[in-house]
Amino acid sequence: MINFIVSRLKAFKYAWDGLVDLLLYQEPVLVHLAAIVVALGTAWFLDFPTWKWVAIVFCIGFTLTTEALNTAVEYVVDLVSPEYHVLAGKAKDIAAAGVMLSAMTSAIIFGILIYDSLA
Ligand SMILES: Nc1ncnc2c1ncn2[C@@H]1O[C@H](COP(=O)(O)OP(=O)(O)OP(=O)(O)O)[C@@H](O)[C@H]1O
Image 1: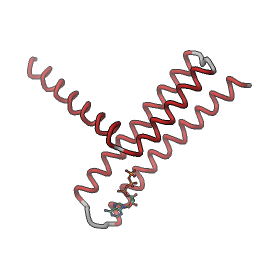
Image 2: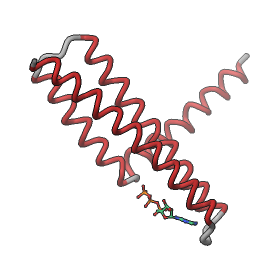
Image 3: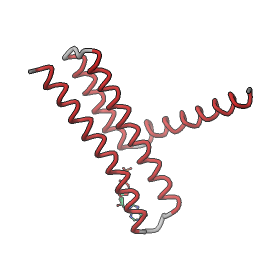
Image 4: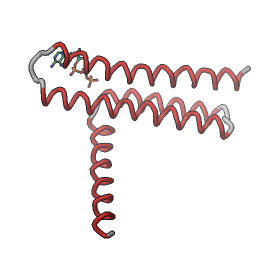
């Protein structure tokens, strides 16, 4: 049982290290962080009800999760295929498309929430 707890704590530490890498050293994340600040500020200014805060928190987690997976794909592709390969390019492009889709979905949801508050 102790071994299980220690291994889970270690796994959490590794995930935490990945989060620090993502938030501090990945430039594209700065764009997301700026958007998050704007979204939270707007939500506060418009006095969003609880359900809208839930939607915003979900969108933030959704977008950052896809950015984390995209960064992981980039690391692995750079490791296994430092030279040009059409499949390496496709892997990076599709991973990036995942980020774009999540960001666009979040932006649309945010727009609907604002429209609902101002209508
Ligand atoms: N090894 C490779 N083989 C083929 N194409 C690649 C390879 N590495 C990168 N590419 C192409 O170049 C594009 C940009 O790759 P890069 O590694 O610079 O990612 P990036 O999108 O700039 O990352 P970031 O989101 O961190 O700015 C990829 O989406 C892909 O189309």
